[in-house]
Length: 325
Image (cartoon, rainbow, N blue to C red; front, side):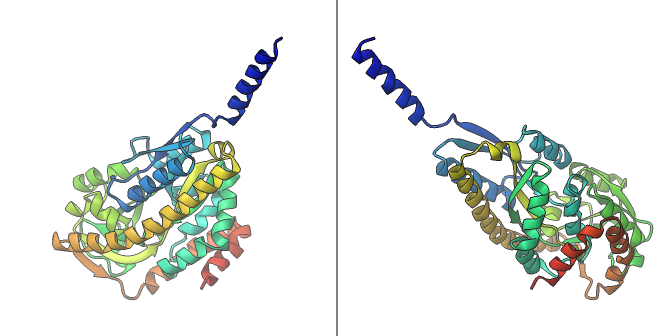
């Protein structure tokens, strides 16, 4: 073998070792329209990841739930078919029981307290639990506070819900919540709600102002009653399979991009919430605020008791959340 051949082979090996890792295209699941705060922030996340990894990871956002419903997307993410997503934590309880704490009615005092809890030790504890299920939570989006809306009448007390059928997300806690308030809970995919309200399959649902408005549910449900019964955070989550394949440097890029996206989303959310409320009120929707929610809160005592009986190990996490200042 000549010296030239030896040097040439050595140069080729060096070039191969120095070449960047093969580029990965990440499929990222989102459920909302492109102009929704979550989707705008996801696009910022995608851009920051692509630029920060110099193209080694290129996320592509799929809006409007085109990759499936959230329960389907959670399973796809765990299997690695979807690499990242923005999930509401409500349906997550079916996979990660610890996250059901976030679905306990009135567990948070307000949105600011939710942010502090999720950015602190309680949020880290939940992230650790999710990781064991193949889901890496990197940051927490806002989803405002949820209230009831319906096609029949204003809700001022639990008695007003008596006999009405309300769509809830697929989580037994929400079924219990509505049942304890006197209504009939109907788990249903988000995309089916509009037509079900219009045709009378259900009488109402519960959600935040931006979702109530962007889904056009306000066109068929003319009563929105502010109960603020649920304040459920959302995650920017990555498949553990995709996460483990990243270098330490790229993990830091992705994590920081998720944190920055959460900051942007929370700011956009606050503005969108105000704009959505103005739009639905201008459309003729009757809005009433439940100024004393004590009757609703008192009705949740059996829900808490049953939850703690089933999950005694989560009692301290509940207390840590409620103690967050």
